[in-house]
Length: 161
Image 1 (cartoon, rainbow, N blue to C red):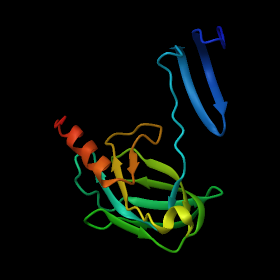
Image 2 (image 1 turned 180 degrees about the vertical axis):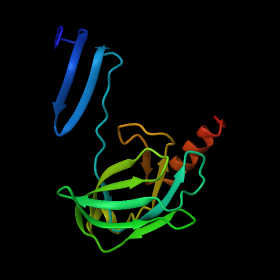
Image 3 (image 1 turned 90 degrees about the vertical axis):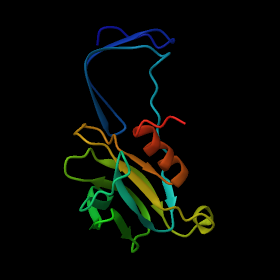
């Protein structure tokens, strides 16, 4: 570490930082609080796990692997069909949903599956958008809103309306 000032000033780092089970590797970086922001996504509350996996243009991704992981072990897994559709309906509890496909960066999100007040009236379908390439993070996205998913696809296709 070269210098740290926790009063809203600049932070210089060198090395590897490990926090809350995530490893972040830095090769000498400059972080300014004005533009450094980490968003921690809340778990998705679902009554069942089903949806579609596409690439960034909305084209279905066949044979993508969809798994539910609990305590670092695969609890359930399936593959998407030719239309990118999948379903894992036998689960309840807290899991990590992980989706991966050949030539795509993985997607992951914590999910809580069960029948509770949050899921009784809202049973979202999942829309997983895999980014091409291989980034080391889970940089692909998981949506529960068809409207937001469609907006992202339009944006990726150059339609900025």
